[in-house]
Amino acid sequence: MSNRRMARECALQCLYYADSAKKLNGEGVAPYAADFRRELGENFPFCQDLVTGTTHNLPQIDKLVSKYAKNWTIDRMSVVDRSILRMATYEMLFSPEKTPVPAIIDEAIELAKKYSTDNSGKFINGLLDQLKKERK
Image (tube, rainbow, N blue to C red):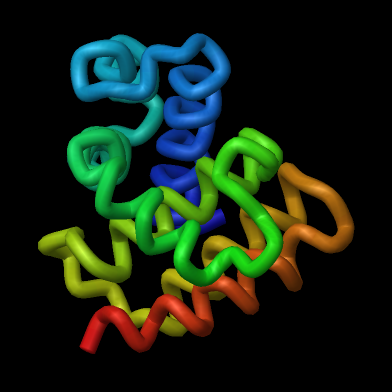
């Protein structure tokens, strides 16, 4: 597993736990991210950026995800899918990393295949594919 993928998996876990505990804000999610400092080593800042960047941009992210989620509301999505979509949206539109969009989408699909339902990969791919136009 690549170090970036591991950082994304750790960020997903942080966002999932914070969302489940209704602590999805910068301060509420920080303790979750700190748990991965040793495990991620030099990739910890990337994980931390995904977590804090997603939470700090959450209103804009949720607005964009809602715009493209036909017949779905944010609250109706599973916590895992919602967390993956939020994190990928942050990385595509707000992250200073400038990771290529196809790589971000591929990583989001792989996370969905690993941690969510059989149909989640297709759902996430479709939504993020529409959202990539926002990056321009």
